[in-house]
Image (tube, rainbow, N blue to C red; front, side):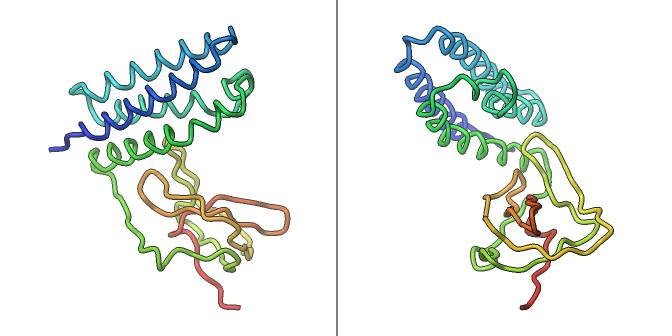
Length: 189
């Protein structure tokens, strides 16, 4: 049985810390409106996490926090002062930890790749056709379904996805893609 008291406590602390960041910008009426949405979203999420609901509902409630910070037209990101948006890093990281916990508790496959196997910047790679290339925190999936074989270069390690699989930004000419560790094969140069 999975119990996530520690994860909930960490998330609650990060939410409270972020509300304090909102309070430091209390002279901005538009931010007050966003603060209200943030409190509503996070309160609902914390209540869902504490409830006996299914793991997918818990995942969905955590994704709502991600959505709050998503760059899109008319979003919080467009009207938020830089310092306030930058302060979300720790909150999103804690939210991601909770998402990974719920993902695993739901029975989904998880991974742990040793640091020694992380691909270095500059490594030449090919995508493996048919492999899951992207698994987003909101459940978005993309499979490497290309016809041509391109050589890419790893330009950035971007962290781990919801399953714990390392992800990278890879580049071929002017095209930059995100790819999971398991969807790449090293090319010796």
